[in-house]
Amino acid sequence: AGVIIGPLLAGLLIESGGLEWAYLIDALGFALALFLLVRLPSMPPERIDPDAARVGPIRSVLNGFAFLRGRQILLMTFVVDLIAMIFGMPRALFPELAATTYSRSTNALGWLFAGMAIGALLAGLLSGWLSRVHKQGFVILASIVVWGGAIAMFGLTGSLPLAIFWLAVAGAADMVSAVFRSSMLQTAAPDEMRGRMQGVFIVVVVGGPRLGDLRAGGMAAFSSPEVALVSGGAIIIAAMLVVALVVPSFRRYDARVSTP
Image (tube, rainbow, N blue to C red; front, side, top):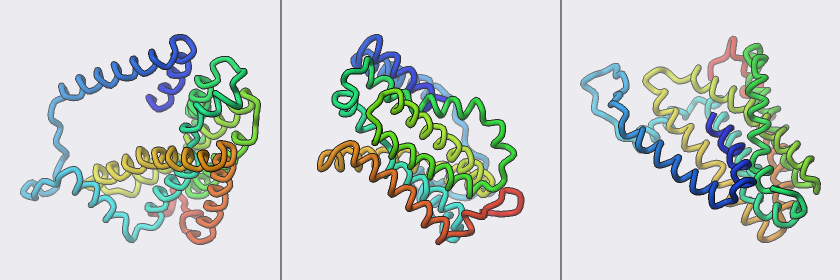
């Protein structure tokens, strides 16, 4: 919920109080969250073997990566998300676009930051149909193709309303992909491995967009934001077609009969 509502609130704060207030409230929110976190009681995980040695956090994440070896379908849920984020995450380009392409629009930066969150929120509110989808691998690939296409179209448009629309489409597609990737992760991992797999999930979800920011900013510096966005979207679409052909088991994954 925070990932969805946060950018929406940031857009409103940028419009009403500027970037200074947005950063200040963000810092205060982190401080409050940290205070509440340290006050939580200790909740050690259930252990099958009480005599087994405790595993540290870094080792736990490494064990999660080791668990993925030989589980191709489950591994691909992380691979496709990394591809989508590294080549498609556009947020690093929002300030540049707001100052150039959309400089005549009011609060362009706030609207750009809110665009994907609007789509994700709408997709979440209308997500009831997702429970009836069983071909989850195919839907993940299709959702990421839509994400890539929407990012490319965002790079091609010069209209702020259209930019917000394509960002909302991208956010909705990412939400659908995330729901099924999470479902496959929870279904595949045994109880004793879910914490470790969640560690891998956090590494991918947090690290992928940051690498995407680096790629987008670096490529835009050598070319333009538009080139960075359109080329990234095209690479994502091509990569998903390759995954569909090279890893057909992922494309055919059916939640009713398959095991990642």
